[in-house]
Amino acid sequence: MPAEIDIAVIGAGAAGIGAATRLAELGRSCLVLEAGPRVGGRAYTESEGLGTPFDHGASWLHVAEHNPLTPIARRLGFTLREGERRRRDILLIGDRRATPEEKAAHDAACDAWEEAAEARAAQGGPDVSIAEAVPHGGFWDATVSHWLGTTICGVEPERNSLRDYIDTGLDGENPQIAEGFGTLVARLAAGLPIRLGTPIERIRADRAITLEGPRGSLRARGCIVTVSTGVLAAGGLRFEPGLPTEIEAAIHGLPLALLSKIGLRGGQGLGFRLGLGPFARLGRRLEGEGDHPMSWMIAPFGRDHAVGFLGGEAAWALAREGPAAAEAFARADLTRYFGPAEVARAFPDRAVPTDWGENPLFRGAYTYARVGAAGSRAVLAGARLADGRIRFAGEACHTRYAGTVGGAWASGMAAAEALSATLGG
Image 1 (cartoon, rainbow, N blue to C red):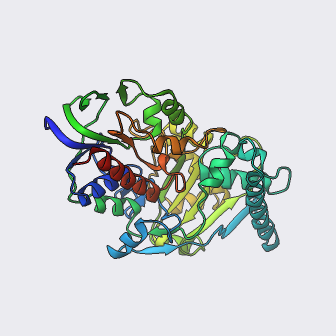
Image 2 (spheres, rainbow, N blue to C red; image 1 turned 90 degrees about the vertical axis):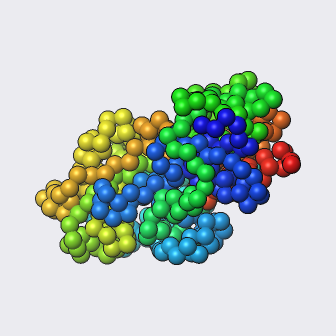
Image 3 (cartoon, rainbow, N blue to C red; image 1 turned 180 degrees about the horizontal axis):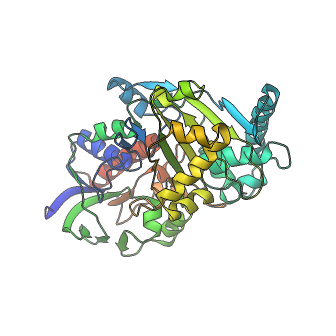
């Protein structure tokens, strides 16, 4: 590594790439140091496993009408496709398909769940868990909590801050990117000064900022840290002097949730053979404690694969058991819809599971706030270590679009501007 640089950016995910982009616009020199072998962070598209672009991480361009990456994606010629909210082409109740009336009741329960959460948050007062605010006991209530809470948020509603959930709610347009969200983020990294395979294990702050890792050390005038709160909480990056108490509390108040995906590759004409069109969505009613239904998307963009989504503690448990267990779980869940023979025939190849939970460079998918820790995002975003020469950025730091690539990008841009102003000429 070089002996000394102007600004170091740790992590080449969307936040690090956004920071480096903004620093270049401001005429600042920087070097992005990435521990892994690729750019993109939790936005990662690969084509080999399923034969077509498969987003292991971020899949949706959330709140597209306000997302800073939307105009960039369109300018670069990426293909955006808006999905239908709460679409369920097949909704199972036990071993049968729900009637249109039962589907309507399910959708009404989703509306009631969200309205109850918003109404409780509007009352003010101490923060509570989402579970304390939403309906219980109705025919669809547990299923809705499993879908809107555990699956989408990646954590059970009992552990998730209601205030943070409302503050960071993702309404509006949510298109997917045909070429892959990871492909877009990797394109944005092109031409930036990025060094892969360069982990940083310690940051020492005195007259200069010294970054140390197995490949050597370097000194910088300033530093932007974009690694996940999961890595920070686990001690993957140490600070000398140690972090202030309020910053440590903010990091531990924003643990990483887990939403895992299992991709199954099918043969030609998958959607047609299953009697479904592109982007078909499958879901089923939760059958009691210990049941963990997956949410399914069949043939996205007309491609011959299916993607199953699983969040919360069940996802963490499968991550610990490994890829074979994840594949078996996914196939068993999909068998509920089509039977074992059809699933085996339609998906003859090995599955492609994601590994966010077990990957030491991430340790999860995206942040949630513990109950009572809803203000932690603002604390982390506003942290000014070493007289403002060290800043944090990432999806955890965005007080509105947390958990999103657009939020991470905007956070990196903001950190770059703040650090540049601090350093002056």
